Image (cartoon, rainbow, N blue to C red; front, side, top):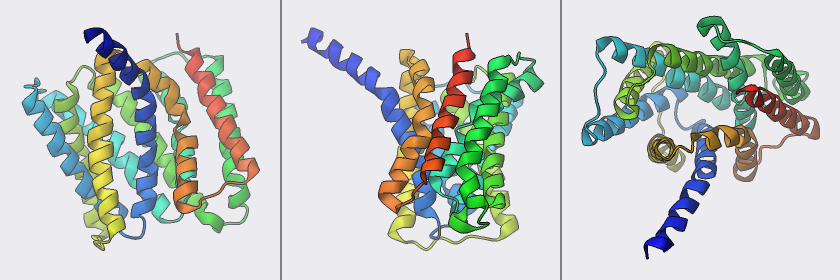
Length: 298
């Protein structure tokens, strides 16, 4: 009986990275599903505290070590960028009409931006492949957004929405580097709790400034909120913890670059979002750009 369970466990671990990527891609579907039914910042103001409460429960259940004030503050700053300043502009852009698949593509270049920020902030070396990857990535994004940008607001791809998506990508890149510089080694649960505290403060302040507390109570609104909390903030994060424990994180990093394509396929099936052949080519070029940089790592 024991011999039978070992292959089953191995199969589960082998499939887990792909499942994680699919779950992660649904985050862009949620942004599309909630658009028009919940104000983007108010949506995140509801989501982050619930996710934080979950992380708090996990930390207490696991008796996780708690960071001191200094490291808790660093975790809050990292969370403000990794979650709040990353998702807020992305959700706003999608609500303003940016196709969720395109937003996923732009965010998919985050590893490239992180590499350059790490060089500036942490002193890490930028080699030729990083520069090549950046050039190829910019070409890919240009192919994706150019067909719509030349027609101004057609399809919701405008200079403003694209800039917001890029800002989100820059924010998560900076948050990643900040986390590596100041908050490495924190427990996933207790550190994650403080990250969500920081993220909650950012989006709630944004909501207060804009004065948008719209939540229409529709099936779409509740489904998006429930999915974002239960699947993204709980199931996906729990799965990530399992992968870290099993030492399978490298498989996730290899598959994470499929997220834009998976998200584009989901939004095509669910919402009818389409891309012209030139844009599909651009997505492929962007994936190649990220792979170029990924393979440059030792």
